[in-house]
Image 1: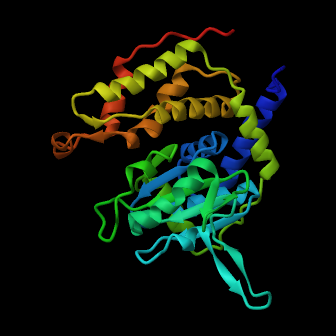
Image 2: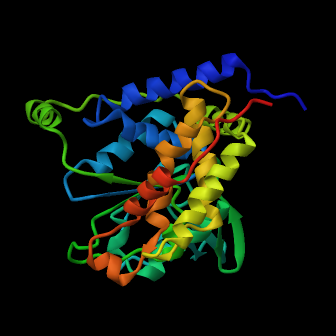
Image 3: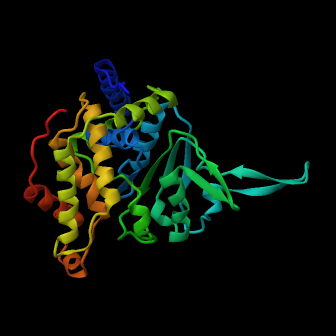
Length: 322
């Protein structure tokens, strides 16, 4: 079957990505690379976990990004008393018909913002697992398929903050990318201070659900050389054999890195993946999936250190086009 990934379509995806980044920049003051990471997750059919202290515009970023997609958007504010049914929905009795009908929860949407996801206990957090992995939910034994496209953009405060619960390891592994948002640069913060009393600039939709689905389908056709598959396997294997790692990256992590690299290549106007795509995304995709030994944690070592070491030590060959 001939590929539908023509040069014109590649150029169009790249153009739409730039337009989305520019539109997000009207409402969110920060590095464009953050928006690119969200686009990578969207095209790779993944989800994003955004970590940062309160007040660094995590929610503003997500709302601006979702506004450019022209997709249905819902928000869940996670709290300690939030129940799983508050996410997925529940059956209620319709007094008019004397039958039980489903009241759909906020998970039935295209773009789901899980705000401060680590404010809720593990049982409630886990209610998203099936939705994130299989794009479906099971309510009272009945499975319902979610709309496409579907992406979860979750924010969380650092676990050192009071009133937070660590995300279960299985849930963390479902996030394609973990972004850490620090404080803005001096120039960006000055822009914030100079515009805070002005009405926010509305964000216009750049694409629609059908456009997103088309871009996701095109992403799957991006070429990945066999040498790059070996390179990804080498990076993942390095994390598993590291002396300071308690639990290394899973096979799902390797798949995620391939999918993300395809998306980055397409966004940058290519129909093939380069080693730099893998290397640039390794930390974003792998670091949060690595558990360090207690001794390493006491010394301040993190998954980022392991991935940086892997990128430095694991070699690769330049791919050859088929």
